[in-house]
Length: 272
Length: 268
Image 1 (cartoon, one colour):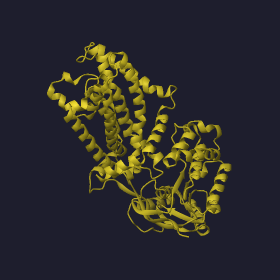
Image 2 (cartoon, one colour):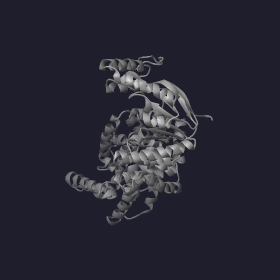
Image 3 (cartoon, rainbow over the protein chains, first blue to last red):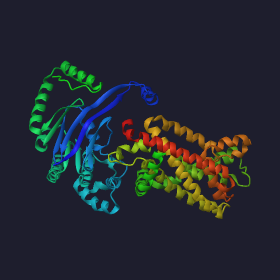
Image 4 (cartoon, rainbow over the protein chains, first blue to last red):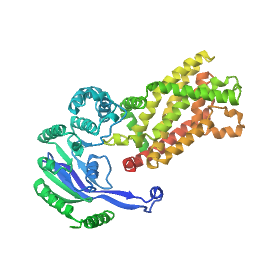
């Protein structure tokens, strides 16, 4: 099978400014750099085969969500590029809903923006409402929804849209067990259909059950990429060690990582 | 030039989308109040009353403007101002308030300020229709001059969109632009021929007030509604100036928009 997603040398640089005025100067004054660089991702490269499910793991701040957003085309990368073979849909907890509109109107709005016709929308609407289990709340404004209801709605829309590539960013961890099992079933169904999926989660159990490959990010660089069994085992040992570190050691570890993230193109260094 | 064509193409290609999205935008704006969309009429009505009271009775003591009574004169000009003001303010913040919703897909972002403006147009047309009915009863019946009105409406729409390409880009990058714009719009209310006639000023000063392109639109509306004449025919140089400003604004606006749009999300 061919490659579905190819990520090549992707870096994402953010600028950290000490003052608001620095940001303005940086925009207005060419040829001079203001503010401090921060690389959320550095030279990330990997390829994903069609139909495989990739789990993104890493401790907080390692760049998982940034990478998910870049693959989905939500935020642009600073360097490098992503080629994906098909439509990409991102499901995140804050799934971009208009709080003032009702759930039904949000469904229509989202589908409209995705380019569906009026007829297609009315066909898909009922299925989405049923899957989201929102019943009578569907005509209430979304701002009154609980976070679980919101993510259920977002998930149901994205799933029904039937994308070729699906990225799930922690969206399953807010729903209750019944719904997250239902979602997992849906994703299994997608897997059988041969869709490519990315899965960002802190739940190692879910990862083991579900993913073929694991991409382990550490402070913006790829630490390991390979079959789930191997990488998860290493990641678990790392977590154990990391947890066991003393407070000062943890801090030292983080500072050295942060220092590395403010410079460009350095090779990943072994820290532990 | 290239970006201007690009933006123009997007507007044509997604015109259906603009139309539909503006309906949802309007719903989102009016939802949550008990009187909902009625506020689009109530609000202007209250403001017209206040301006009439202050400038009609308080300051000017019911002096007529030429042959037109003050209320009718002010009424014909201010109707369009509500639309101008609402559109400029809402469209300039449209991108940074909506990008989170939209950016998830490769969405043509130049559509965002456009549909925000269209969402303001519908209440404006209703207000305009009510205004026309009111004018029938206060001495200014329907006339042949009404048929020039679409020219000013279209001209205004194009100008508002071009302007919003600039303001929405700038205010996404620097949020202060929104505050500045608020002050500028308040200033323009008094520097446009809405509440008092600039003909009170010396001739040489009037020219500077006319640099403001909204001046042209407001006077055009007034000529149509009050049947004063064919404004665009009687003022050919001014018409040319207006078209020139619109084209220039559109070129600058689309250049800025296309240049920065891929980075909008990083400025949040």
